[in-house]
Image (cartoon, rainbow, N blue to C red; front, side):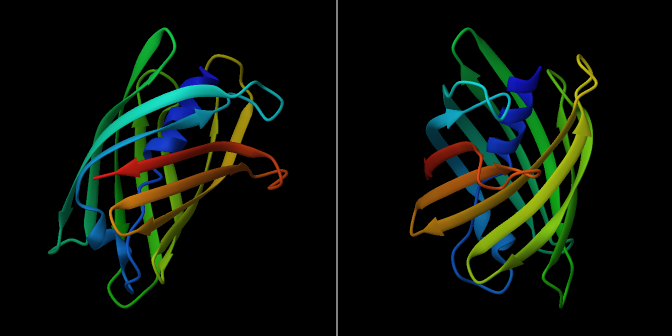
Length: 163
């Protein structure tokens, strides 16, 4: 189930151009590939994702739906990230029925990046899972990186998306 958690992290990593509130720039369909690992000491696994984002300007909400594939299985993902008018703060919820279930996320959006954290218990093992996620957009290319929250020097995933 930890691989499903890595897919959660990856799916959440769709970034935006340099604006004060980048969530608004994250709409559209994204395809990406790269690698992810289940645990800090686990092997890197190839991952591919397709994500469709819809941004609602009235509620400052980005809705994310998609699917990621790792060797031997597919993971369905969905979530919401909500901006706050006049603030860099973002909050949200994520759902991954193949792994974590539902979990809260929180972070900031500023100057072309979205950064947030999540913490959850792996339902299969009871392990505490926590990661830092940063999304950056360069034109129509998005680069995402996740690190282990206990040791940010440990990379958990790197994926490059295009629209």
